[in-house]
Length: 125
Image (cartoon, rainbow, N blue to C red; front, top):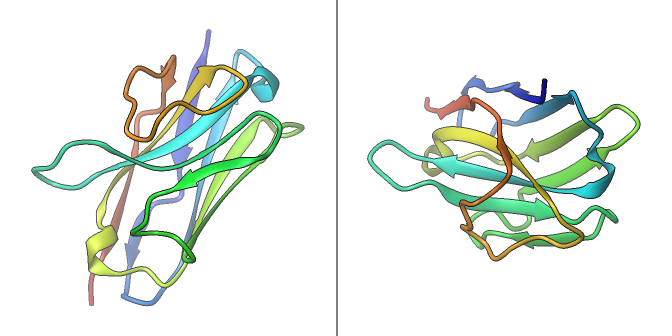
């Protein structure tokens, strides 16, 4: 059974950091591109970052450039999103998603093959 489990969210003060993880089971990540999406309350789900299966980072949303870092560890079948210098505007539920492809789709593409259940990130003082 294919599963994606995202975890690592929580409550953090502005300026703080979190590292989200997305663990895959039932398949290997080697042939997949991996993306993180964020969905703030009352808003649509939006692409945050995506990494190709050759470790090339395809994009970061402008709002997170220089603060977030996406990475993957195929040996551990896990994807990470390091989130630094968090602001209240980063508050959202974050989802990891995979697509069987060599390269990432366009940002905000929601037709991914697999989705994790999401992990809540709340940035508040």
